[in-house]
Image (cartoon, rainbow, N blue to C red; front, side, top):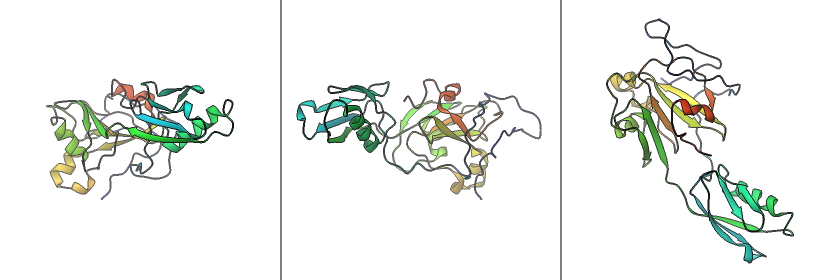
Length: 230
């Protein structure tokens, strides 16, 4: 048995067939996707604030720099000024730097190296013993993450655990997971494995209206500060 995603559009969840009070309702998004199931992000690493990159210009080494990506996602190039690189892959950042330098350097050639990067992590918030940010080490599932975060608080909605996974710089995919049934029935295959930067929210009251996708800016209703800050 596979966990199904909410159908595109708005669904109202209820306990024993009764209307629920939402906590909180997720704003509607116009972005939809045809495929069911939580998206996998098997893609190249994307730069984040606090990452350190080395920039080497082949023909103009006097402009070489080693820079730390600032909290707002920008770096400052000696040759061309500020440019935002957080959220980009190394290749995308390289192309952005080349484009930025074209007005100053003639046919620039640049190499970009990631020298230090943020450790993979996940976040658990809401009705757990120790909400926070944790290192993602090895194969960790949603139930593992809850245990690492101190387990459910009394009254936590273990049947409505929300998993947020970023699918683009602007959008996150949302899935509701019934950990109560998974643990009760031993259906470990339905216990979703986490990916780097996944975020989990455990509610105290029933979840109201949900859509499959939401904008990253709306995650502030569940996480403060936002789990993804670029």
